[in-house]
Length: 272
Image 1: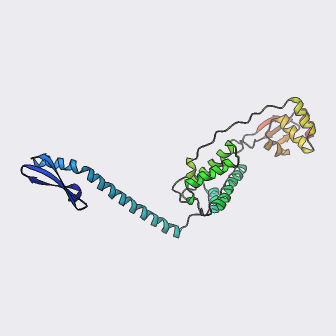
Image 2: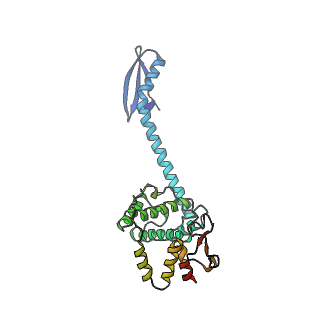
């Protein structure tokens, strides 16, 4: 300890600080004749060396902890290996922490996941589990999505799901980081739209073939969305009371309250 904390020797009436580094001895006067004051000066002189020694000690301890952690991880993986990429989708579906999404959204999420797995199999076959995903690989995949020409909205939805996937099954996949959290969202450029004129609507409806004409009529005279018009059931149509009673698909999961839509005379003739 004397090599780093130093020690005092007295020459004449003056105390001198002494220390040894790499076999070489050093000495410096404290200019003090009182031992207590000399010790205070010794501590001041040796402080930089003590800090350096402490830093090396902490670095050594850190390296030993990291090594031990790696060994424990390997042992744990041998007993209970992390799930494969394909098994991660099943883990997400079974997780009670995932979003309560409808079937259409689930299919979109599955498509996002399948695209990631296909890309990894081709570009990074060494990635066998989600834990193998690095920040660099995630950035490369995000760049690939941009090169494919995805819109800002599609890109954001894709990355947002992957970020959520890693968060939801973090424990099952034994993840320590979420590489998607560092990827910035893209600015969304809204598409400009305008309403069709009456003449344009007439031309579209007249040119519609077969049942498409009925589908257009439902949308035109009820204001229902395409998904509701195409899945409307006869049980929801009351021609005697001239009304349609429908729970919109968009709000069915959050607020299953039906809306009442009056049936226009033209639409009633088409339905009849």
